[in-house]
Figure: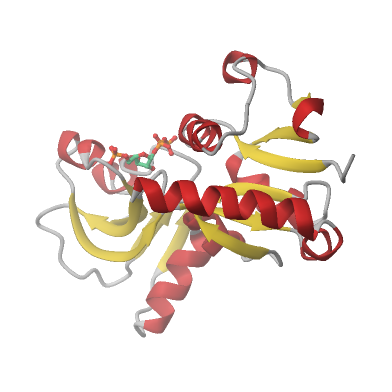
Length: 210
Ligand code: PRP
């Protein structure tokens, strides 16, 4: 029996696609995880343990080594800037990070940008040489320009439905987002064989899907 692999899985919108990808790579992720509220799910036949984490916390668990590997969106990786290896682009949960505003937006004297991603937004505007006040929100970001908290937002766009339904428009794309496989730096050395095997399996599946 080799080393136990602890895998941090994102709960919520990425989970279904991540589980589907693992299953198509031949890993029998138990169906019971899909609707369970259990947070630690041992799968002895795979010599794995799934840790069900809030997506934004996945890089933290992996950096500290309480999970050996994890699945997480590029948006979270860019924002959290954790000391982890990014092993593979899984090509799932595809969306983009954009600057968004009302159609009649004009540069404001004291521009304010609301976002769930304050580091990403600050860096973006700093690199453009634009001074903006960044206001951190935790959800329903699109509200901010509608009710006058900020004149623009930096947020994820997937189908564009949220923008359409709220009369907002994309001004500029910051970067494209997909989910990534990440690894703890020490685990990657100490458990290289099972991690590399999983990585190769997933790489083949991702390539076949493309
Ligand atoms: C995300 C994001 C956008 C929306 C984009 O919010 O912040 O609001 O999804 O998706 P769309 O382009 O397909 O409409 P989420 O649903 O995660 O909820 P939140 O508002 O609580 O962040």
